[in-house]
Image (cartoon, rainbow, N blue to C red; front, side, top):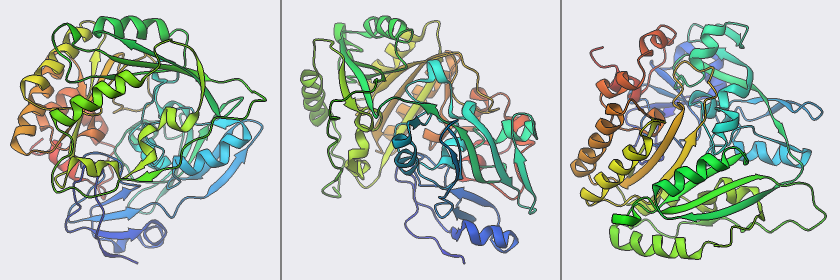
Amino acid sequence: MSAPLTGYRSWGGLQARGSTIVDARDWLDAPDRSPLPVLAYGNGRSYGDSCLNDGGTLIDMRGLDEVLAFDRETGLITCGAGLLIDRLLEVTVPAGWFPPVMPGTAFVTIGGALANDVHGKNHHGAGTFGRHVRAFELVRSDGRRLICAPDLDADLFAATIGGFGLTGLVTQVTLQLMPIASAEMAQQVLPFDDLAGFFALAAESDATHDYTVAWVDSLAEGRDLGRGVFFRANHAPASDEPPPRTGRSLPFPLKPPFPLINRATLRAFNWLYRASQPRDGAARRVPYRPFFHPLDRIRDWNRAYGPCGLRQFQCALPREGAADVVAQMLRQTLYAGEASFLTVLKLFGDKPSPGLMSFPMPGATLTLDFPNRGERTQRLLAHLDAITLAAGGRINPYKDARMSPESFTASFPRWREFACHVDPGFSSDFWRRVTVEK
């Protein structure tokens, strides 16, 4: 049963406007009764407008959340596309299996992970989520139900992985999990003083650790430009010791009328955060949840950016010259007078994705976010786009809320090939924006 849509938005704070909501099961029973175009809506954790469909229909996927089959011997699992990774972990970790690729939050659906072909801290070894998808069911707007796999409807399989939910409705996914010996991580924390320190650590660590990522102090400048903290880890072996306790999640305590993220508050936070990290480089056993999803412990943390939300920027850069380009971007942020709280830097590996429109490429990836201050923020992000494209890089679509059609086509030159597979009954605010007049 459909109803006017209220309260559905992206994680960056973009509100759905003039849309209709319909439960996935109802749409599957009568797809022709929903106002076109339609789009699947998972849990709204995309930062930009790729999960929104103004004036059309959003299909709420969260009712399709069953585990349909789980082979505990082989680690092959089939589940509804609306199942949250958070729930998947509750089922698989006690059985000794783990998602092969983990995004930065557990509160995304399996279908959303597929549609965005998400990457994790282990991209250098495991590649993207789509590499581990064995099959999925895709329902087109004309009612056809298709089973897609690498060797079955292969073109549509490739277009759907990383295809922004535009090729039809994914209803269920078969995923190959990876075995683990415990629910803990053997983690090392290593401060570094500049970008050269990061790239040296990353090159060394990607050969010895499954998971690597760095936090960067976006306000450091001069000789300290690019300093930060490097995290690397492997899944810990089994142990008879009781596991470390994981703290309970806490709600963000208020809805501030203005952004709490500014240069003064962030300067204090960055100093405290870096100073609080262990400096001995020792490996420590930590629970897997705070390692993979530290911000999940604070519900609705995006409220800290104020009522206008946040704008996140993520780019992928070729290996050659990546350090200079990252330095240029950090300086551009400083010149603009902005402060990025979640400044994340890591290396992408060379594992190719089966997805036609997948975002990662061999090299480095930098993520920045800013309170949305209107035109001022738009100008900075446009500068960062230009730096990215001049370096031969690309901009992440599911983190984006405003890239131009020119920036999109420069980032993804195969977009016309992909467009041939878009279901004519599906669309999104993002797709209409980046393909206008194309």
